[in-house]
Image 1: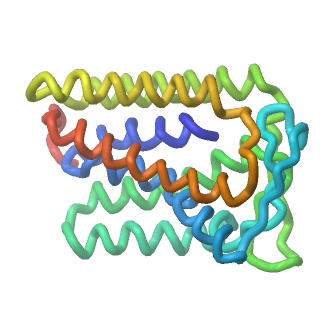
Image 2 (image 1 turned 90 degrees about the horizontal axis):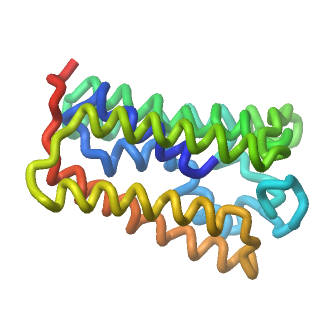
Image 3 (image 1 turned 135 degrees about the vertical axis):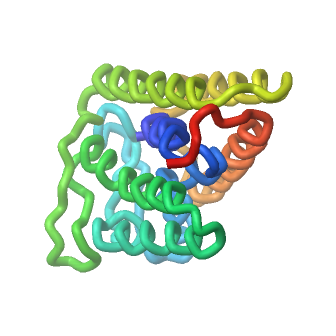
Length: 220
């Protein structure tokens, strides 16, 4: 999943209107924020293997600390707990917890059986294999993304011109990136890991666009 994870963040604004879109998008992407760090530290492993599945050229050999279900629950609790400690805003904390957990669920739908339940060699590996269908993957993710953006647009209103063009430029850039680079093999694992940090710019962009939009829904 790529824009499918972003879809969860956009949609969450309806449930947590006071929480920044930057954080709501960071939550479903949080495991992939940790993953390149763990790759560079040598704690997890991935191979560039074109054809591993029709949709992705990557073989995820080991990522128990970022992507196992048990650790996902740990990261969900830590992220949402820190947010609750800083804000005391229950809907936002709940949206962040669900957002982080949604990453594991969506990856199980997408991946071949390589998603661990817990760290360690005895863990079962799950995966329903949506990535075996390029068309199916793109249709599912595009629909999810469209619904998520629509829910966000219905839940907010632009305060000024930046609130309009920053949002829709962001949406367009995500779509262009998805359709042009999602299946392109990186030149090396190191380049893959370091290039993942560019994603911080995308999360800051979401925060910036959201700063120029007002929520239309009251807090739950």
